[in-house]
Length: 317
Image (tube, rainbow, N blue to C red; front, top):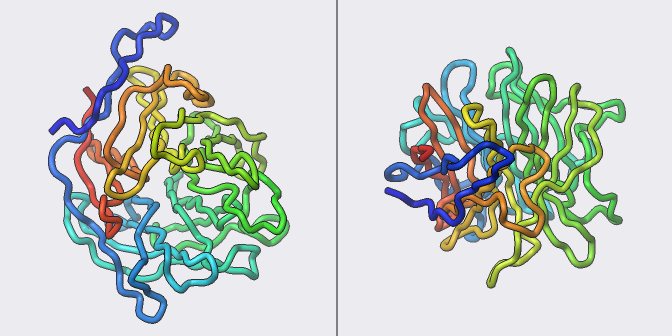
């Protein structure tokens, strides 16, 4: 089932590439998570949104999703977990509330968003947003995470703007890849306080403590019906070594008309600013996570109903 609308084949003599592999959703979706009943803090309007998926040390698959519009603090968000025996299983088991914002550590109450986990050696690293900062937690089993505190006794790595009174989600939706000895953290931020315009940014580090200044890597051109505030949500980057290209997936629309635009570039710091020269396709998904396991690619996304998370196979054509 070809669900990727190919809009542009990139042909750039500087790359030595005539045709670029395009990500294609390959077959039907299966639902792995729903909208949990969390008792007193649940509401009829709550929604599972941005999430992370990874394999724990015992081989089980873990999913943590931000649940928004709950009664969890003024920002209404927390992280909730599920566990599956196999990535191809449907209806993973709920593991309950995984993490909530801790104001004693400088986090917003109800502000946790967008967990993303990578494994390095025996350690799992979780990058997440606390409404205005990108933060870090760690685990050795891939299930139980503790915050990594810096010299100031807080878990933050950086933020994008120092708005006052800090009531703006100025850096969010982190995603990290490592190439060589360098970590690249991609995330979303607003460019101004009073007239917010969203874009995707990147910072890099070799030690997870000291980060470079931010670089705007993508600012998708606006189109009718899309708010510029949400033009580059949930950036997710995949590197394909066989073509030496970085693929950036950024979401413009959640829900029934979900849309994510995919760009391919030889430069991890640039996927196009207000132009589509690197655009390869759009996908009818939101907040996607791309996973490769045992040689098979998968794509996970929020469901169009915003009542759960589902998975499908992915291929490159």
